[in-house]
Amino acid sequence: MPMTQEEVFKKVKDVLTSALAVDEEEVTPEAKLSEDLGAESIDYLDITFQLEKTFAIKIPKGELIPENLFSNPELVANGKVTPKGLEELKSRMPYANLSAFEQDPDVNKFRDIFTVNTLVNYVMTKVN
Amino acid sequence: MKFLLTDQLVSIEPGKKIIVAKNVTMAEEYLADHFPGFPVLPGVMMLEAAVQACAWLVRQSSDFRHSIVVLREARGVKYSTFVAPGHTLVITADVLELEATQSAFRVKGTVHGAPAIQGRLEMTHQNLADHHDGMKKIDRTIVQTQRDRWALLVERAASA
Image (cartoon, rainbow over all chains, first blue to last red; front, side, top):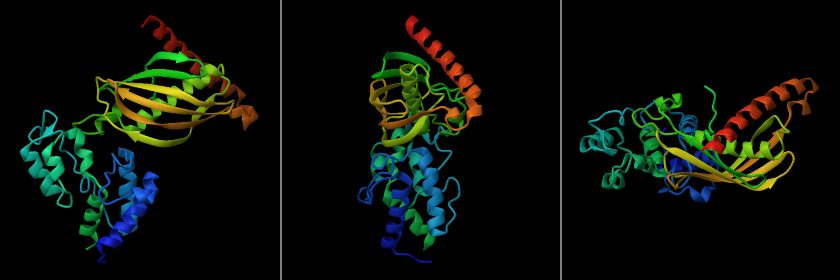
């Protein structure tokens, strides 16, 4: 069922305020789930589940948050994602804005890719 | 596995403040999935280590009066740096409130001085016998186990 960006954003905002116990005002499009909204790994599970319920979509394991990246030495070396790794990320995460991460592809900063917009864009690909 | 997340007592000011250390090792089973190829202590474990630090101070201050000392509410928990195997998470818990059956703490966890976790924890202290008279024996067993564990922590703190 087609939805507009606005409609999706509103519902994603509800999911995040519920899952992360934050105020609505904090959930801005550019807010980083971990750094700004305090999301921790277990929260991502909750968020994924609530997105599935809210939008009646299925989010297969590894689709929203890519797996099997860090254990591959061609994709990650010395704590940084390699150029090959970045290409891999871009193909697996077309809904994400990777420009900031590309400047400093430190694995410790991988979580910063996940902003509210990342979720909205991902959901948009699933409902439209 | 038993989630005993306080390895070393660094210092304690009874009724005021406690500092404990948790070493992270590759042997911790949850690291296999968190994350494959990038093992780091899950945030919930950092939080549990902080809860346990607070619980030790409550128990020591009350001479182990309650068998159950657990988290009631966590507020404003923020995570910063990751804690990887080979690193030590040092948790400092400062008492904000310490009453008979409840307490509140400001907690901070650091790795090499860099912030890893911080927040405010509210704890509740109870005995199972408060609700079921027949549980007195279980309370005693739990308390004895906790006393034994505390004795280990204190003994090793003294020799460190």
